[in-house]
Amino acid sequence: MRELFIYYRVHLQAVPAAKAAVDAMQAGLRQRHPGLKARLLCRAEVATVPDAAPTQTWMETYAIDPMTHPAGITAELQAEIDAEARVLAAWIDGPRHTEAFRSCA
Image 1 (cartoon, rainbow, N blue to C red):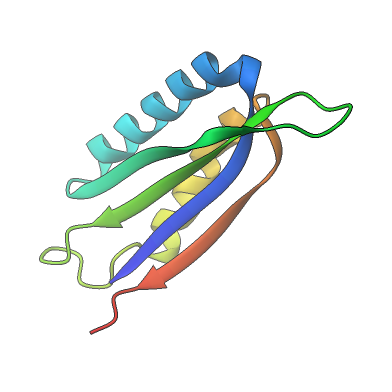
Image 2: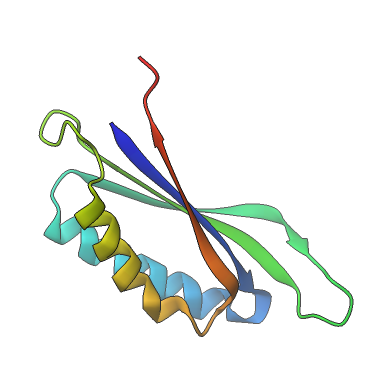
């Protein structure tokens, strides 16, 4: 079963707005795709780089019920997630990095 792990940095001052946007995005995806499990995680520490605004590292995770979707997250669903995430561009620092993993049987 294929799962997605997507990580990126969020400007610290933008955390409330970015969190609201991710929550709304994931709620919409879960509504359109029954069985989708979408989570938002954040790294506890704040990254500071000289002459740059502080950021926090976030990770979105996506998995789907293997009983109804044995392949897991398909390329089509991944494309939909990526398209929805465009709303986050104003609050993140740099690109979103996507990693796909499968269960080790």
